Amino acid sequence: MSTAGGLQEALSGLLTVAARAGVVEEQARAEALSLAAALAESAPGAPADWAKAVPGGTTQDFFDAAVRGRRWRGAPTAVLTELIASSSPEKAAYAEALAEIASAACTLGEPTMRVVGNASVAAAAQLQAAGARPLQTTPTPTTPAAPVAATAAQPAEVPVPEKTVEELLAELDELTGLARVKREVHRQVAVLRVEKLRTEAGLKSPTITRHLVFVGNPGTGKTTVARLVSGIYKALGLLSKGQLIEVDRSELVAGYLGQTATKTAEVVASAAGGVLFIDEAYSLTAGDTGADQYGREAVDTLVKEMEDRRDDLVVIVAGYPEPMEAFIAANPGLASRFRTTIEFENYTDDELTDILTGLSEAADYELVPESLDKFREILVATPRDSSFGNGRFARNVLEAAIGRHAWRLRDVTAPTTDQLRQILPEDLTDEPDQPPEPDQPADAERADESERAARPEVADQSEQGDQA
Image (cartoon, rainbow, N blue to C red; front, side, top):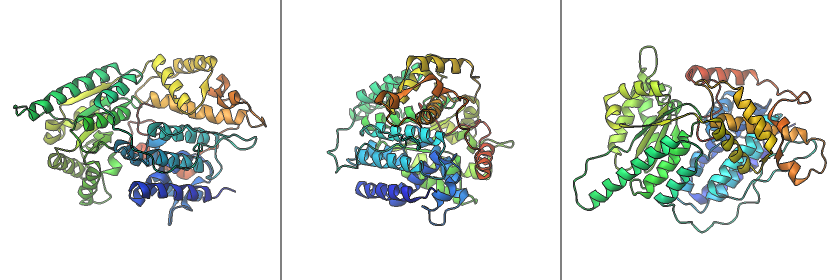
């Protein structure tokens, strides 16, 4: 029977690295436990095993943590993002420790094939973001592959030079699709660069708001671009740190009136020197009768904090186009501060295929040509309504394929390297000999229903989106 021993050991290793990096222990602990919960939430018995690593933890705590951690299944965590932004010598070691957390998540409860896929992609995302060594997986005949870091954490590395504006813009240009977004970011950078030079030359220059509105469907790259924007603004000298703090309504609003202002102010303080990214920001002002008291309190506090920290804070709000228009119009303070809107369009089939290929390469898998053809067939048969996940859809397909791949190799005692790496067409769809994924426990279903009730505009998406 599974225990939390693996998670506790991985957590201990991560906290050791966090201490060397100067990260607050509770922040690192909460982040790691959220990531583990998000990866293992479909595994029967996982809540109980997870709770063993959390003093006083409950099943509801597990599912609450899973909701917070879903955003990191395909992107670097908040702490890792900050370590990367500050060029911390511990960033690679922290990424490897997060990969060990992902591996430990595969030991919680009775892991499903999907958990294995989730963990593999999440571990690869952390390692790739930090430039750490690639992932290694070792399937056995009876146990699905669990992601592990290539080696144990190494001593502190020599800090690498911070990236220039040109290097960060080149990274933006290398992203799949997003032509309109790239043009607007380049334009915004040019305007801000000239404004800064005029100010340094003693010339008069109009105050140009740096805050941005990102509109588009889920999974269209909003978080990824926000992360690059934070680095670009830092390289321009507009921000002192350049970290990205990603939140939603649940992380700004408290359970009691009067506490929300304090909670929102604390979140903004954590983003000082960098970018605060608020996903589905319209949930703060949405509703049949407009904003509730809690949402109004959060917005009022946000506007005040933006003014108080205007010299070293950028706020990016994101969501669907029409609700975001209503959100900005709901408060005069917001309308005066958010004047630039960037639209993120849905990806084409070719762009989604490129995203799937990139994700698989990052996780050290190879999609054979026939698999790419199969994926295109899947895309043709998939409705493209407002709930379509775009890059998230591609990631979900890969996660499921990795699980099926592990099952396909269950009886192969000595698989070749090609067998370990290659995703075949049958891995992209359910086959008759596939064991059915067990239903989520009732608590998981209740948690999902609660989340959908809080966010009715999102249809069963797995996390708050970014490029993949």
